[in-house]
Length: 216
Image 1: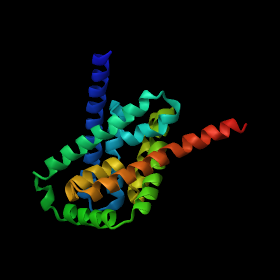
Image 2: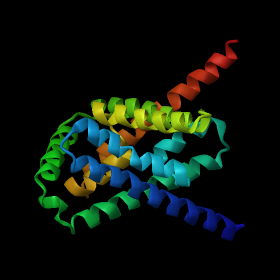
Image 3: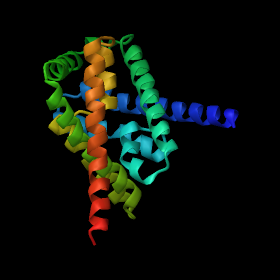
Image 4: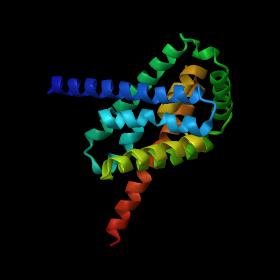
């Protein structure tokens, strides 16, 4: 029993680590692209890869807490830490490259820093909430849509909306924070606030759907 639990934890951590890497790859593309719309479009490679290969993304799982067993909550928490490790590993690798010298990369990162670290916590919470809705829409659409083209387009649309609008995605922010201000109380506080917003946003549609079903 103990070995099985350890095996499941390790598998979840590995899949979550890979998901953190993929979202970070989307973040790298966004930072190196001049055009905001194109950057948002290319950012979707992260979520598309995660869905295609079955990796574990916190924001992709949290919306299903209400319909899963209690151990799914533990798995989702493990996923968050795995995503964190993957994102920070990618951030560490980026620091070793010439990407930091690219003008577009530097200017976009400075803009992100000014936006995220000068925003108040309530704003971060609400922006995280909006992002949680977008990701739940993207992931659930991928699961529900029957046509392959529709599945891909709906995922891309969900990602593009949150990126263009500047909504806060905790895993993407893990990567950005690893480049801006890796270790501080303020970084942790902002990341946890965004995570809470993502959680509430991911759960709002399933919760309202459940309530609607009970009112019939």
